[in-house]
Image (tube, rainbow, N blue to C red; front, side):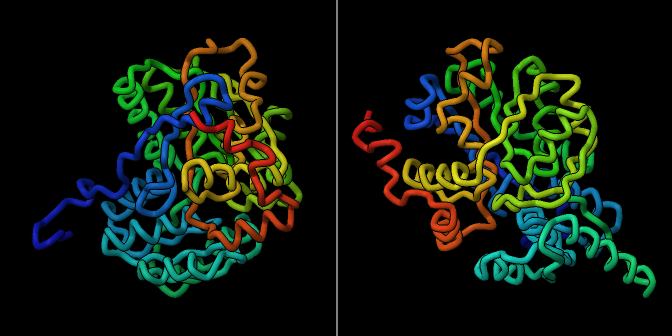
Length: 351
């Protein structure tokens, strides 16, 4: 394809960016140790999804794909739409209902076709696959981009850890005491685990956060095999895959992945705390990640598995599917205090 009149190979186009790793004074104060934030919310599509999805899209286009189809809770679809726009191909996205109108407008601004596929991701995925079959029956071709269960996606996400290694070193640190993330279908968790193995951090614990009602990974860990939920009841819809991919269940049996659960109310509360502390709006899935630190339970999660002086790396997965009205609506619905000083007095946070 051509970029500004210059011929560029598909594999050479930069779609995701190296995101900042910043020291968080407020979260470090709560944790009693250094906390660094990997700001995946600063990716061009608004979330970590661009790493893996863009890699998968580039491979597909390199092999001749001109029409990409993705099912999504929102973030994977946004990443597919962005990647397709940059690669000069068509994108059709099947996403969940309930996304804010400004978010839906972003899809159309990127030139993608957007369809509401159903109330949860699993139904969106089934709808997307019916569409692909219909296209095939009509003699048309399109390429399916899985939002999380794909080696190409895991490879893309693994780049996050390679960046963290260099960034921690420049901050005067070696390996972290733990990496904290959230789990939906398992793509990010798989990519992080693969990346940590590649850089020699396989012994470093991963803290994997979910909300009750979207806890397919936690149930799989306890059962020792994938477990399919009957339904998603959590407000953290982007964590809402009824069943995680087999890969993360296998990884949990080979390395230390500490599966933890949090109530929706605390996840949303942590989104508001993060907005106050770092002026960044993130979705409840990311609030679940942040709760591992804001709750003060990190030490309990890690027990004696890590030195207390090693830094914690928290992956800020993103916020492409939320706006302030949606977050405030969830806070009202769940009874989250609007005066957050009640929980963490501002005078105590001043350093």
